[in-house]
Image (cartoon, rainbow, N blue to C red; front, side):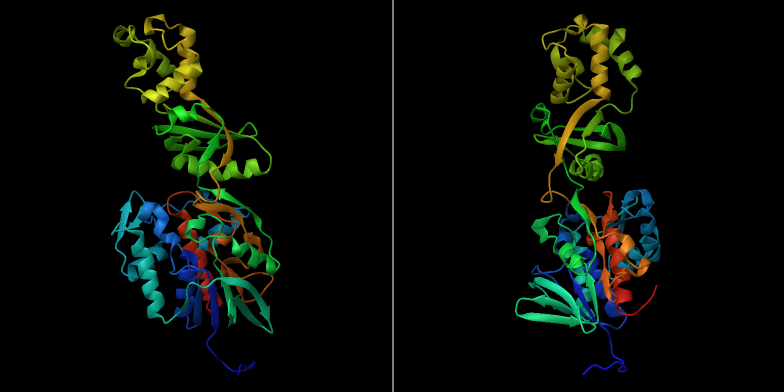
Length: 418
């Protein structure tokens, strides 16, 4: 029987066995709490296995705050500083991970995401954390000072509750957005969740022509006619539109703008290393023209771009496929260079939660008590990971947020401090 004066180890319920939930459970157990980890999948860490194309880029040495986005960006830094990248690396090294550094992007040396998930599961077992897998939480609540997690045929009870249920992204890994419903049931608000780190649909018909082409480009997103974000890297064209890391990076801004009724346009500079003037000079050089004047159509751009991309550039520049290089006018060359520097696509949507790696949106950080990750409204309730209104760029940032917020939620739920 519990009494107000009896000392006992805190019972902590952790709902969600993803990255933030696993580290929250471990942190709480290391503080001496009795922890129950509840996960709807048959095993914890399912989404972890999908990260980094199965290699798990679990954090990044470059922790500039510009790589994190939120409606309360000023509140992200203190959380990351309380459990920083260096401590994350030390945490995993202690569990047995040998870290591989690829230009600041950190991976397990095994090259397998299963290594990260595996060491976390082993630590859960070592700490005798109660594992309730294949168990879906139907509702949560708080009565007479104790939290309940209602499941089919059973209700778990605890002194503290950590919601680490993830977002709506990647339903194939079990994501459902239940955490938003649970947070709302305690009175929290939720910034509308939308897909992020995903491909973008474009309206141009020549996307089908470009499907399968990859090219380096500078990607500029304009929202309502104004420059919103600029990224650079390899763009992948698809029949539906645009993909690739630089497109993923801007997708959260496009999702938000389109959801609010705005317009989005992407401009690709497919030759970012050269100015328009330099490109015009190269195409006009006497030596080059001597060898290309009798060529026609895409043959003229052979060696500059993939053939399908050359075909689209010429088509958009209004240059006839039958016209030989010696017949091109100065005006046509200028139009062609204009397309190389600003190949434009009208964005109509994102690829949705099914293809998104994370979501933008979630419970605002301003509704928490600072770095404790405790609800400002409900004592003993903690929130972590993708459930919160924080999303990071590609490169290990979303996982670093999961490690930092999850660890802090766990130690504070157990009665510790940081």
